[in-house]
Image: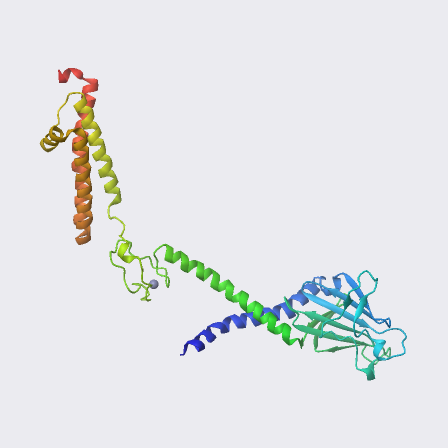
Length: 351
Ligand SMILES: [Zn+2]
């Protein structure tokens, strides 16, 4: 399958979700709100007027707008009977002229201009108005004639004086805008958490495809994920990356015990004791205590490097060396501590 076609197919679910959300906001939400008595007819009322005295009542809410067009009571022109053209605010509080949206029916055809008492248009949809419903109330008061005619509208019920309408007159620009908006929202709500997860996986050395935790000890990184076999991005700093050390706990103990050994030896020599380790005795004689400290830590470093090298060949051998080094270096410390305690509590032994 070609790349553009695959990209297009990947967008389909988001567009479907966008269409679903658009229809929900245009059809379901206003109906649900009307059922709870908070439809557009509960919004604050504004009245716009034409020069001829024709009126338009406007209730604009967050989710739907309601426009009621009334003809003027008496006028010479049939055209000006209805509130067409620019309308002014009735109480003259603002000089701005209003013009209802294109989808609003502000007048019937001229031939029928005296046949209707009012025309209601409800616009629904969010963020853009996508559908309109029309209710045409006729002048006729005869019993047989229907007082109201719903056009492009599914009439559900009359509930406590409020018509439950599902608007069916599509407003093309609004629908396109809403579908684009909601598709983008659906896409973002999936793409954003995915991008976060990808960043997190990259940060913690996991496979970006399936989250498989890579072996942090591996000297050479695999080309493909061992779990999902996705091609892994190449690490440009791989040559500089040294893997985590194998037996960090052992090394901490090793360095701690070696330091303790030096401190205790120093203390014993200070108290005129003598070094029992012949190698150490020679070094202390030749280089002094500072030289001995340097030698000791060089040895510690060398043992740690050996453990790491060995562990790369055989992990168990490296582990054995590391813990053996800890145990062996602990022996003189225990011996020195025993001596010091003995000296502190039973000084007569050393006389
Ligand atoms: Zn994977």
